[in-house]
Length: 341
DNA sequence: AATAGCGTCAACCGCCTAGAG
DNA sequence: CCTCTAGGCGGTTGACGCTAT
Image 1 (cartoon, helix red, strand yellow):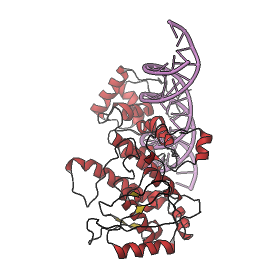
Image 2 (tube, rainbow, N blue to C red; image 1 turned 90 degrees about the horizontal axis):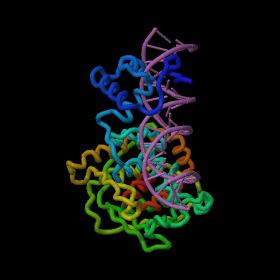
Image 3 (cartoon, helix red, strand yellow; image 1 turned 30 degrees about the vertical axis):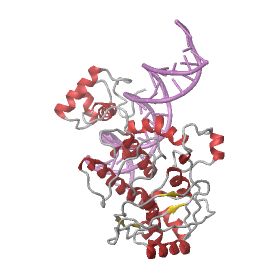
Image 4 (cartoon, rainbow, N blue to C red; image 1 turned 90 degrees about the vertical axis):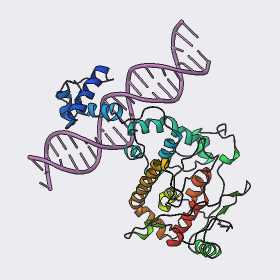
């Protein structure tokens, strides 16, 4: 059959032998890969250039990190996947030493199932309805969720212009460091305090709809009082990408303790004390932010149409955020977004 | 012990895109 | 412009190992 890229050549396929690996490593370390199509010839391999490239990138590169993924890496994958979808190469860029193939395999074999067991659609990160779950036979029992806090919290949002703006007024007038308290009808109130003021600002001049602003409030002081944001429900069913709100990048994380089976990564915000050993995570966060911006712009058509209706709804938040837990300033970002809109 | 079922992972396939001619 | 080629990427496949029956 032969590869399209090297149909004329007789190429070996299948697993690489140690000898082949050695030849490829030797060739690339001494001469670089240059044009991949010429590598097999120069390296004395009966492989196609594409195959050599893949082998090098996915397996032989010295900077590759082998071994299982850490919880932090797993969380990064989930976060970025929520924003970018199946763009494995982009996701892998957030994980030094990992390849797109590795990330993809890990997603398909582990994370996907984990999300499904939590009742989340791995494609959309949206909550799968009980009906869907039943029909898909996913996570029917909550065997993997021994704690009730893993249940999605049912919060009804309304909103939109007037009410959100009312909230805005309320929040702005009552405190410079608004704290959102979410009440769950079925469960005791989940109170999250805002430990860190939002710090970054993003604005797309071309598309104000794709903008979020969450500027560090110079008057911010440690939260000592609470404002309660009461939001009632919208019946609309359209969902909205979280990235529009800058929720991910603006948050330390989207995951409340106990909502995930592992420790969520700590992404440091500007306002926090810088911790040298966590610089890498900071960089990851910055990259994440960047990607969110790109994605927000990519999605601006959708967003704009949603915004035009002046009634974007929060079903996505209701399902996803609430299922994972949400920190108050996440919501604050969302609120900020609404205000700025 | 045999084997079916399942999970993992390396590798391949085929499409898309950018750049050169 | 158009065509060709190489590289990049996501989806899929198949080999292999482990576990349950």
